Length: 75
Image (cartoon, rainbow, N blue to C red; front, side):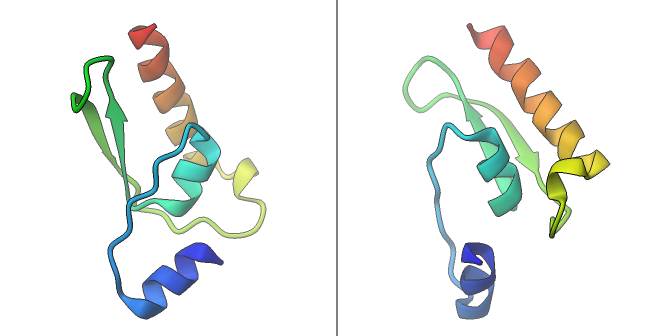
């Protein structure tokens, strides 16, 4: 719903979240930030538009796994 509104209005939006699933579902791009303020570790382009049952989508699972692996390396 939020993504639909953003697309309809045609605005750019920045969400800051610790919820990986929310980030993958709502984003066109995800930036993984490092421990130092303002340090970007990686930019991930989300090319899919996930709909119902997105938790079961193979590509959604791949994005989530990749992000978790990147974050685990930062700890």
